[in-house]
Image 1 (tube, rainbow, N blue to C red):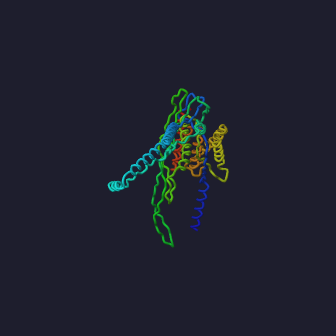
Image 2 (cartoon, rainbow, N blue to C red; image 1 turned 90 degrees about the vertical axis):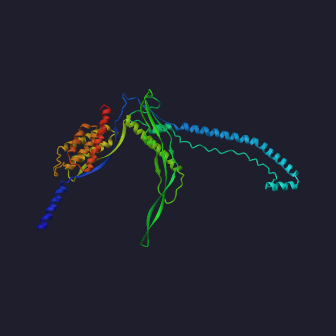
Length: 421
């Protein structure tokens, strides 16, 4: 009887906890927002013209000029040697005939004596005159050239500004220094492996090989005004430093010919570096359309108890995804969600596990509000929410999320201040 009472008590507690433990769900949300520049241009220019120049093209031209000059010299030498060849051949023939005549005039005894004294056959040998040939001139290894205009129109864009078809407004120029790589080296590593034969385990050494080489494609960027004065200049260290590439391991020693690897890599590095530089420029003076991945939370329940929070989640999720397409409607949806969540927070009771808006739901709503305050640039109300979170005992995960939002809003405040907002 006593055991039955204990079991009933445990069941009652379990039912009670199940009823009041809120089932909070989170979903990822991916959206685009406009990031304010750290150094906005004031007054705003009419637009920009972007272009790409390649410093290495001058080096290419020098190498090609040297190559062509050397080929011309080789051809001139060949033609001169060919014109001189008959005379040299005749001179050799005449000299040989003269030497043979003198040799034939000697007595046999003299020939034998000279051979014994010189310890060699002293019979004249006809001088060999080599046939002229064109020396081989290796073609120089040139840096790859690109359609600079196409690259600029594809990768060099300042968000929030119109791109002009010719110089005017501000000038945005990227100078490519050329893709470089070292020679590949074979690296080996001995690893222990185990095989089982007839139930017996045996360890043995296996040598694995891979190729390593270093590469880089340095670039600089300059943005200037109509008076050719610097607005922004950068030679990113990230692009100046060599990076190491390693191939996959294999049990056979690979060929050190990396021409195909570097060919594919060069195109990829070019794209990545131009995108990297374009982000730097946009972060500095553009209104960069920036992708952000975050989460929104809601309470999953069978009844209608949390219908309001589900409605807010749906509105916010839709609004965030509409940003950049129909901003007016997007902000309308986001503000609708903000209003619902703020109303729900009035019921917050973090000490009461039976409350509808208990500690877990309160924290969930706070993070949802911070996400929406971020895209609406509402730093005042965001600070109030952070203050609220500061007095709640958070899990380590929630602490990290709070710190991430604090840093996010610090950056936003700095940008708003720079833009006079």
